[in-house]
Image 1: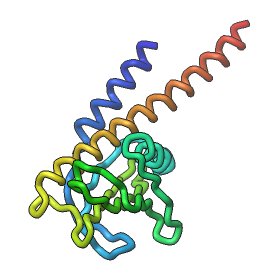
Image 2: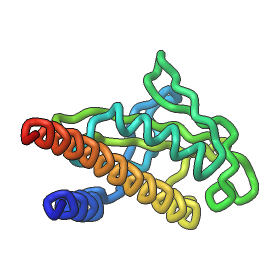
Image 3: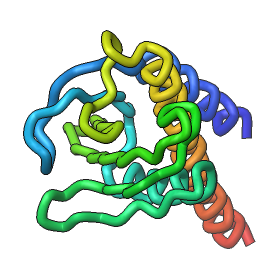
Image 4: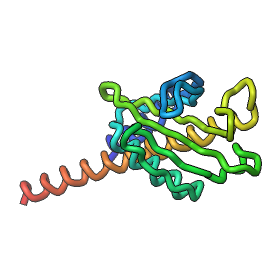
Amino acid sequence: MKQLIFTALLTLSTIMLHGQIYEGTAGMSAGTQNALIIDLPGVNDDIVNDVWKEYMKDFYNAKPKYQRRDREWLSDDADIAAIGKGNSVDIYAKAEQQDANTRFFMWVDLGGAFLNKSEHPEAYTEGEKLLMRFGLEVAKAKVRIELETQQDALKNLQRDLE
C-alpha cells in the first residue's frame, strides 16, 4: 500500500513537473494551427482519449466526437464561458503516442481565429487551466489503473497463500 501511495504521488509530481503546457503550431484537419500542447508521461494514447471524452462531458457538458479520418476529437460549439467569452468555441484535440509517453494537442477555434497567447492572453490562460486539469484527470486515471493491477496481484497472492 505504501508503494502504491508513493507511485501515486510520483505520478502526480511528474505530471506537474513534466506536464508543462506550451504553445506551438501543429497539423490538424484545418491545416497547421496554433495549439496548446502537454506531454503526459507514462500513459498510452488510448487512456488519454478515453479520459478526454469523459472530461469534456463531465466538466464542460461538451460531447466530443472522434473524427476517424483526421484521427482527432471535435467538440463542436462547446460553451466554455472562460474561453469563448459568451460565444461557443470549437475544440479540436489529438493524442499522439511517443514511446511510453503521449503528447496531447488542443486547438481552440474561437470563430475565425485559433487561440494563441499574443492575441488572446486571458482566454489562453483559461485554456492552459483547462489542459492542466485534464492532465490531472489523466494522472488520476493512471493511478486508478495501477491500483486495480495491484489489487488483482494481491488477490492472486492471497489465493496462492491459501
